[in-house]
Length: 124
Image 1 (cartoon, rainbow, N blue to C red):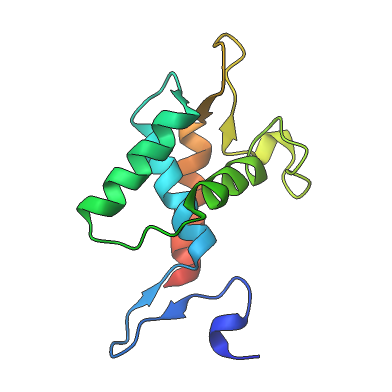
Image 2 (tube, rainbow, N blue to C red):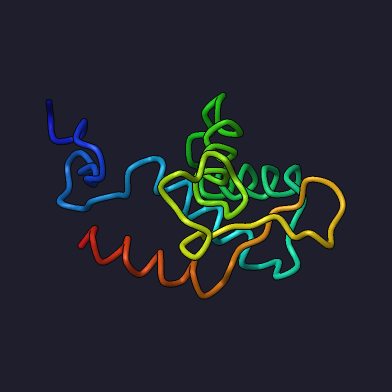
């Protein structure tokens, strides 16, 4: 198993000593940034568009399965998700506002901030 294959570890960029977060953590950060700007939540479609637009602006890769990765990350860290086996409701970063109709996603700002700080501390 190489350094890059070990789960939970950062990948080292070629030609530099800089480290970047693993892909799933990168999507988590993008998802938090998009939803933090919309305290009432945002429709799934709008979240996907915002992440795609931000990646285009930053000249970052947009994989064909980007939406799958974003959806999987949201469900993994969502309070009401069956996929959130590792996260109890108290630890969840995301939720679906009950007062909103349709597929609306939202973030718990304090939990998201704490999660990002913990993840970034692990990178450095």
